[in-house]
Structure formats: structure tokens, C-alpha cells
Length: 622
Image (cartoon, rainbow, N blue to C red):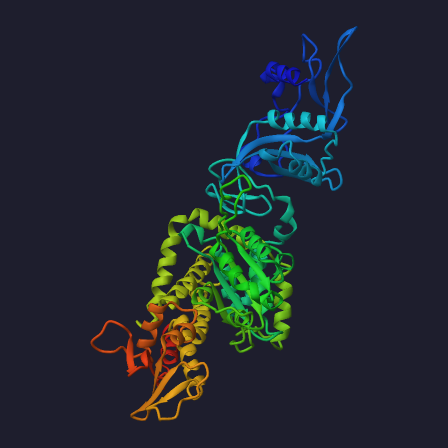
């Protein structure tokens, strides 16, 4: 039978594989809504010897074989393989995997289905499960499945596509989760997950209607304007070669308007009620959501619903945009998945506090990836201007309703503007960076400067949207709104490295808490000291307590969780660790038969220069 099938395939003329309509354009082929019908050779066209063939009969794909008996050679009865479908092309994804592209009408919903079936799954259990789950009702007989596998491999259109594994920037164009393509791609694109997310991303009303309602209410309100900037900035990150994403965590007590800001941001791309997701999920699930939001924004509500014990690494993965390394059963590793996106999160407590409660030692890298933004610093908590409404609560309800009735247009139009103005994007980002970094004093820590660059991306994105006439706000209003939010973040975060500050606080706290119980006073008396779990020695010099911390206590307690060389430098610069003169080592001789120790003192009491400098920076940008 196999040889006979191969014989018919070899004998089919090009005319028997033509389409019933003219070749669609690249734009039509890129759309999952386009269905291209292909005609199979009929029995009448198969002249000469009797040969097996495939056909569509009564809405089903069938195979007609050949039988040989005493009466000669004849066709067998048609064998049903599955419901009718079209093979509209073939493609390769960014990882080099091959696919066959299938399209058909769903027999229940009547909607068009379009999937990319991995070639590696054709004839395998996973492939049959996928087709059955989409409604093709594949035959259960093994021999008939082999015939269907042969058809999937060797029939249908040979049109070439690039398989887009994710939405966002692909082949010079922008693919939306609905499968819509903005711009002209360099090659035909196919996005497999098209129909799944159509309800959430289908736009409602026009961009002008958004400006007249949501935009008019958000005007003069820095926090929701910054949330809009965050939503828009997702489409900018890849164009400027950003290394990681940008996260804003809006935190304050309940009923303050932070979720309203999240809804406003989500309205840029789609329906906020359908786009909002919960932190209550697995690390893999949250990472998958981040990948799905590539070149757009992910909206996660109420961080308190998540598992604080696992959240630290998840936040890193989501905003770093690189999947975990996973091995293949056959050997080697699977190709890593990458993405770039922005994130708006809400919660009643700061992200850093949430992670601490889960037992995580928060690091500066996490804090500048997910920026803790206080959402109660406006005159009306999350809002600075309520445009004549009775109070902040009434304003928040009206704004939420507006955002959930007007959505999905600005993101599309902003992407179209970016495509037309790609050459100007980097210049706009650099200009905003220069303007904001110039405000920072020289002592600002590298982490503060890195976070400031992220705020500059938000400011530039909002300025560009203003230039495109999308928001109804001017460029200067847009920059100032993000600048005010940056100032409010800076007032809390400060100018120093948060990692350094945490180390100093940790070391100072341990010394202060143990100075009377775990340090032996010098000079020692004849009485044998009774000190449990001794950390070292203490001497009073010129009215000041000097601690000689034993090496094991210094490394295991004083600087626990920090690298030795870096910790020594930070504590020395903070005036807590003294370096002995005339030697390379940092330890000093404590006394006869007492060994060596780190000579330390409690943190000097002085004015908080960090806060004063922040205040100066806050006023300088205005």
C-alpha cells in the first residue's frame, strides 16, 4: 500500500495541486483569518492504472485505496481519516523546528481555527492529541493514522512561513496576540496562538474616544500617566536593545486607586478585565505569562496573593526575560526562550517587604527591576487631580469604568508610529536619560542611575505617544508626570546603594544586639570570662566602644550573605571597619594569645546626607 501511495504522489501533475482561488497576498497569508482551499486530485483525473488517492467527501478527509482480486484491480471503499481541513503552508520557527500549518472551520463554534503542527509530532501521540483537542476528530485506527500522517507530511501548500513563537516584534513587524500583524513583515508570518486571546485584545471604540474619556481623566495625574508610559514602553524595549524589562509595583493600603492605575495601563493593549492576572500562580505559570506579554505589558494584581517564598527568583526570571535552562530527553539542552516586556503590579506592601517576609534577602537588582512606587503620595492618594469629582473614591470608580469601556487602540497606533519613526526612538531615549541623569548628584549609586534610566525610557515613551497625538497630553506634561513619579520613588529609595545600606544596617544591628553578651571586655580580669557563643572582644577607648570581631563571627554573622572583599570596602567607607596601618591584611592583633580580629565600631551618628540629597534632586527637576 505504501508503494502504491508513493506512486500516485509521484504521478500527480502540478495542475492537480492548484488552489481554487488566486494566490493571496502576504498580508492575507499572515492573517490566521484567511483560509486557502486546496483541491485534491479526483478519480476522473487519475487516468491510466487504478491508484489510491485522498479526497474530501461530505466534510471529511478520506482515503480511497486499491484492491486486487480475481476480477481485477479496483478502488476500495473510502476510509475516513478526520474532519476536513486545509494545509495552508509550512514553516520554521526561530529555534529551527519545522511545522505544517493547518486551517479549518470549527464544527461547533463556526470560528476559523489555525494551528502550527510541529512536524516532529506528526504520527505521534502528541500530534493526534493536539488535533483532537482542536476538533478534527482523528480516526482511532493505527493503520488509518499512518495514512493521515503521510497526507500531513506530503500534501497541501508548500508556501513558506516564519513561525512566530511569541507576539511582539517579529521579522520587522509587530504581531499581536490575536494574530494581527502591524507593519510589513520581512517574510510571511504565522502566529499559532492567534484565536485564543482574541477576546482580551480585540479593541473597543476609537483612540479618540479613549482620549476623550480615559485620557481626559488621567491628565494631570502623575501616577496613572506613568502607568500608561509603562504600558507603552514595552513596545520600545527591543528597539533600543534593552537588556531587561521594567516593572512598577504600586503599593499602598486598599481602596487607594492603585488597581485603577493598573486598569488604565492595561487599556492601552486590551480589555483590563480580561488582561488582569493574579500573583497567585506557580513560577512557571507567571514566567509563561511574562513571555506571552513580549513587547507589551503584563498586569498582575495584588502581590499578597502570591507565594513570598518563591517570588524572588520568579521576579528575576520574568523581568530578565530568559527562560530556565532545561535538558532534552535525547540529550543536550532545549533552546532558551527570551522576551522583553514591562510589568505593572499592585499590592498593599512594597515588593521588598513582601520578599523579606518570605525569607528572601532582597538585593538591589530586584529592587531596580521591580521598582516600588508609593501609590498614596498624591493629594487624593493615587491621584493628584480629580477634575471636579466629589472625592478620590468617586473619581477612581469613574476612571475604572472608562478604562474598561475604552481599550485596545492606543497600543496598536503607538506601534504603527514606532514603525514609521524607528530612527528617532534611540535619540528620544538618550535625550530623556541625559535630562534626568543630570539632576542626580555625583554620589548617586550605580543602582540609582540604572533605575533612573528605566524611568527615562518611560518618560520618552510617553513623550513619543504625545508626539503621535495619541494621549491628548503635551510632551512636557508627559515628561513631567514620569519625572514626578521618579522623584517620589527617589525620596523613598534614596541615593545610596540599597545593598550597601542593608549590609551596614545588618553589621551595625548585630554589633549593637550582642555587645553586652557575646564580647569579652578588655582588659580582662583574673576571673575566667563566661561568654557563650563568643564573637570577640570589646575595649572602651576615648569613650567609644571598639569591637575586635573574630574572623569566623565576621564572615558567618556580620557580613553573612555578602562577598568578603566588597563587604570590607563598604564597612570601611562607612567608618565601621578600621584597617591596620603597615599591613595588607584587614585583621589586627587583639592581644597576647587572643589571635587576630576585625577592628570595628558602631555606625557613626551623623546627618542623613542621603535624604537631604534626594530632596535636592526632587526639587531640581521641577
